[in-house]
Length: 419
Image 1: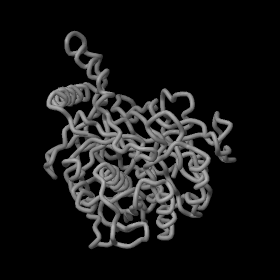
Image 2: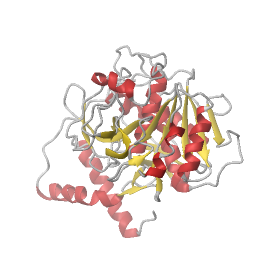
Image 3: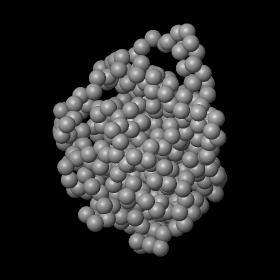
Image 4: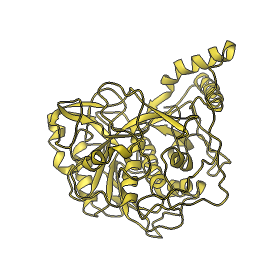
């Protein structure tokens, strides 16, 4: 993922152009500007009406007309070239589903005045969330990933400190990093690509439920069998939810691992992927499959708009029967169920030492840990199979405009009511 000097120059120009587009309401990479919080009551013991010290409402940018002349041409070129600068973080038959915006150079300053990418407060504003940020009260979110992130805990500490979230450490009992035998070491080999995925997952779980505990379970490698076994191990800890931000192309052998993703009383989320083709475990009827959107500030009642991304693994399973609780256009299991911001052109802010500091990540990996966090925060998902509780509460979700054919997502979070 190293860039040549000319590529870096182009990336720098593109980053500036993206910021200019954002200032005009274009919805590209967004600097941290605080966000705003509503005072309406929310369901779930982990969420309360609140305002962080020093918070002030952030005006929602109004959409501006597309610029003309030279600037318009330059920004049009940016849009055309941006796809080449959104790079999958992990590759291989099994891969994590994070996508990095490489137009944004890493910022090594742990606590800058502002960062690029959506911040927790901006996500709370977009999804009508009002989490408590005062103390850690539980429950637990489990994150399953491959390989070891050497600086997972310290990077998480920087992320949470930057955004005023309560400390989540091994010392205070909030954070645990375990191998697949549920031991504090020895850990798997480290992997700089998967460390970005891990940092993203921990950040999004933290943003969704700042008062939840987090357990990171690291599989020995990116083998689907080992990851599936790690889910079984994580389930023995009885977390409220288990997040899986990875996938392998759906096949009969992969689907044969379905039982590993079926644990009564534990919600299991899985990202649908970022390229055409249905992936497993997202195609399992035992999981909540999380798709992706492009999220932009808007001058409407919500203050935001969302459209479905076309580059995702949403679609119809070739192997899994349609569950009784799903009413989709597919004759088989439709993937996915709910969605969350995934376009790395805006992305979310993440701190990862191995990547050089603050970076902007997207991909459907953002949604699996965030939705897991919302389920943990709501605290009453119950024992119903798969995504069936979300289908029963679908009217509580935000609609998505421009949903492409084959995308079966019901919508995006609108508070905790759907979870």
